Amino acid sequence: MLDNLTNTTDRKAFFNISSQPVIGSFDSTSAADKKMLTNADTGEYIAVVNDCYRVVENHELLIPLHNQMIKYFDPCVIEDVKIKDVVSPSYRASFSEYVFPKINREVGYSNGNKTTIGLRFIMKNTFDGGGCVVLYSGDIDFFCTNGRIVGEYDVTKRRHTRNFTVDGFITAFEKSIERFNWTLDLYQKYADAKITNTYDVRKLFETLTNKKDQSRKGLSDRLFAQYISETLDRGSSVFSVMSALTYYSSHTDYGFSPRGKSDDTTLYARQERVSNWLGSKV
Image 1 (spheres, helix red, strand yellow):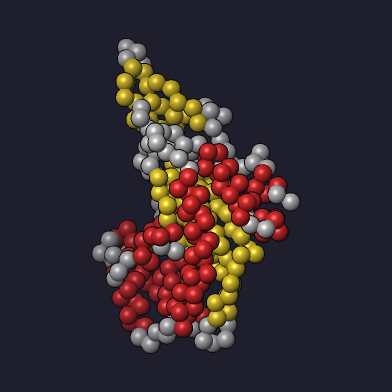
Image 2 (cartoon, rainbow, N blue to C red):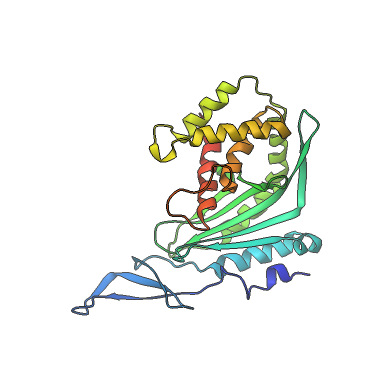
């Protein structure tokens, strides 16, 4: 019954990291303050980092999180958990996502329609010296699988230092569950907050996406088109604005296909961006 969390044999995220000195190829000079990280299972190069960089392997994060989930939730909840691992081709970043379909509540719209929102967690880890370990506590819209990272209070970060511990993430996990019902109350208020001037929505998207940035040219228009689409099911409300943003963060269709170089981690990067948008004061 608990195999979803106890069986990690086939999980992409459970690769091992090894480190070794950085040595020059010509004179065998060793870089005193650097080390090279490789995938211990395949031997593939990952990155060169500072010698003081604390490698935090995924099993150090995920196994304690699994134990806490097993301790906290009823076995029937654990039985249905949906797990997804996404690892960048370079192994420099990994995302482990957990969705709990049985932890859910409905949000109702003024037109009589409803949608079901479920609980979700994402553990992000990096191995290139440039990022933190991050636990995102959020939710997912089962109507169209829009993922949301709710806001700054649902993001827990720890740096890769020698004093790193997983304790802060366990505490954040417990608090995020307590906040879930509060968050759904807020979403209901969003659904009840009608929008009468669509021009304000267009201006909001232009401000958030920084229309002067040529790399995002046209994104505000596509977001506005998605908002109009959302209103057909959800009505003209603040919730539809949020749904348009989170559709962009969760889908690559209808004009939201990635530009340039991308991989399976692209959507998670979008979710981080949308989280910042939703937390902004514009």
